[in-house]
Image (cartoon, rainbow, N blue to C red; front, side, top):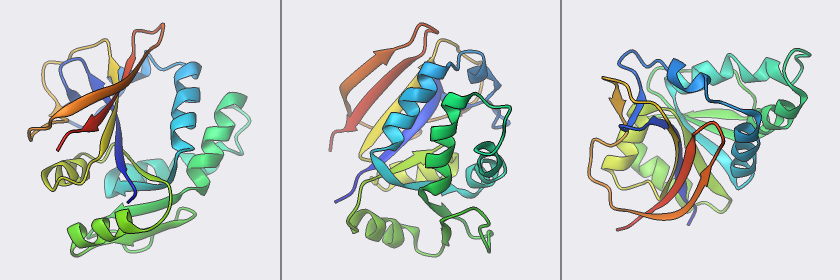
Length: 188
């Protein structure tokens, strides 16, 4: 069975975004060596599972990036990966996804996501997608977390964990920027 892995930027106090969904707190610490690790992690997946808002933001950004002359050359391989990978969007409102290799699922998400996990293939990666992540956690569909933990705390925000999760640390990596990547398996 394929694994669902939530890869999430979080503050030290466990928020994945501020109250308005903003992520400006993570930009100041992002470095090219972090982008390289993110690309390595994505190579173990063949599917992105996304909520509509995250999908729309990514679809508005990544398709043009690989052709842009203004981005750092080391970011192009990641742009190519993200543009080519299968993207599954959980949305009741999105009709036609316009981004390459994308499709929408709606209706009985538990049944459809379980079926997606049972298909052969590599891991399924989830980025952002607060509402979707909460649904996945509540329904015990998350197998692993890769938490990009930033050396910042914010007063209020959207917590990653609203439901209890027992986790086992399997790997960690610290960057000079102070960001620590913590890779956990879910303990059932």
